Length: 387
Image (cartoon, rainbow, N blue to C red):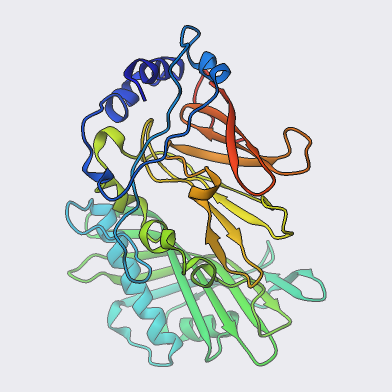
């Protein structure tokens, strides 16, 4: 993209400071060495929307290739330079996982608990709040009494009963709040369990306020179960299950790009073409090639002139998907927040509207899942986040 066009986009979007850091330098980028970047030229009438006196230069979306291949799924870990809250959150969640794992395996280990451990839980039977042919939901009533449990074994016996724990139970934790005062800390944690029985499956979502004593290894001193919801499904099979690997695992994009989190890419993209770390990225679903199967367009992070390519996955009859991003002409490397499939020209196929840091891009579908940008609309107030 020529410097004058890039600078005009920056002015139109009131993002001169951001683009000066991310897009207004054309020096060599080592992150482009693994492959060519895609350039998408917008029509002249769209260029006028960016700059009234622009006559010959086109708006070009440029960027970089995908990341090195990795085996399996990965989670970004923060080890060095960690904030105190991050460190405590990570340590306490690790301890809570260990406590639940030993409890659910009937091998309770009290050494992670303080000697004065207590738990505050809803007492009595739960009230039925929803019921149909497949799903029944129970919650404590608004006037339900509370009970204080002093013995750890009694609390975990209560949990097994209330959550209908079976031998086939899994759990997940998510810490979303933390407060530290000296050698004490409290964490707010979503605790979710999934238990499979002979004729039913039970999902429990509960909110715990956990109090900790911060020794070399954190010790759990109390639990306050603030919310508790039980949902039983009249089948031993889950209504939904994670099939990401089965659907996308055979695509190159999954192993090289999607398996990584934002922290991975922030360390690997150069500043001038890098990712804007505060963005939100959505997806759109439609049958783009008229084969009767829904396809997925996945928006990806980037900057003003480079980033990760957006991805279009085409569903196959066996339920898997192939990556048609390059063939479709939609693997743009500009920061893209959201996308919408809609028939803009009333020809019976789904066209694409993408909200990017440079404004709205309108691309027409040829009916076979190949798209051509036809118009570009700058939103002067701010880049469009959602459409």
